[in-house]
Image (cartoon, rainbow, N blue to C red; front, side, top):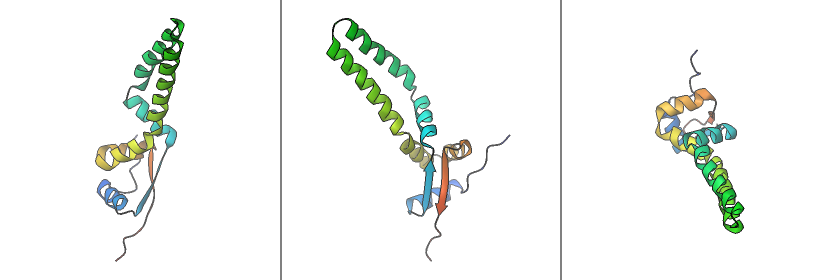
Length: 116
């Protein structure tokens, strides 16, 4: 089964977006999942969170709590940047643009016709 084709070809999408004529909608939760998977976020966070707990258990409560909170902040920052990452990559890479549209991550909401 083939993924649905995007509403606009990639080159037209890029030109319309850069000219301010295209509006896009990006699935926030889907983009967050995508970026988390791309950056292998769980493999980075688990040792950081575990290190924070270990430091706290060894008596370095302030350092442990700080590391734990920084790991949670890193998770939030990576997931919050997901929409921008998906849009930036879709503007650069035609294959990714087609895949993101097919997966429902990115939707071209409207495109205004150029003034002639």
